[in-house]
Length: 116
Image (cartoon, rainbow, N blue to C red; front, side, top):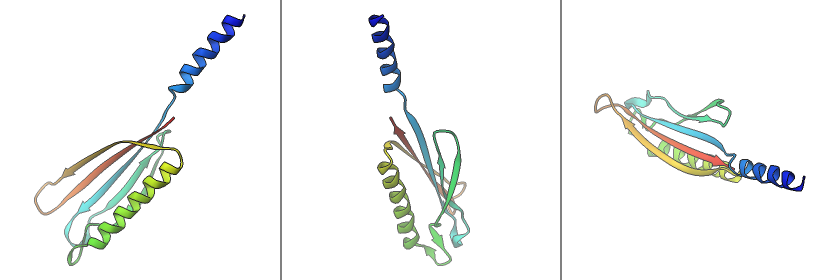
C-alpha cells in the first residue's frame, strides 16, 4: 500500500510540475500616412479568450509621430511589467513587417508568455 501511495504521489508530482499556462500578446502597429491606420494590442489568454486595446498610430497628419511611438512603447512595457508581477515569464518575441507597397505597412510583434 505504501508503494502504491508513493507511486501515485510521484506521478502526480511529475504531471503537476509540467503543467504550464501560455498567453500571447500581439501588437499591430500601423504605418499609414495621415494617421489613418489602426494600431492594436491583442491578448489571447490561456483559455483562448481575446481582448483588444487600442494603440497610437506611428503617423499623424504631419508625418511620423515620435510621441505616439513613445506612448506605444510605454503601453507595451506596462503590460509586460503587469504580467511579470502576475507570475508570467516572457519566453519568446517574434517581430514581423508587412508592406503591400512602400508607403504603408504594419509592424507585428508577438510576445509569448508562460506560467508554471
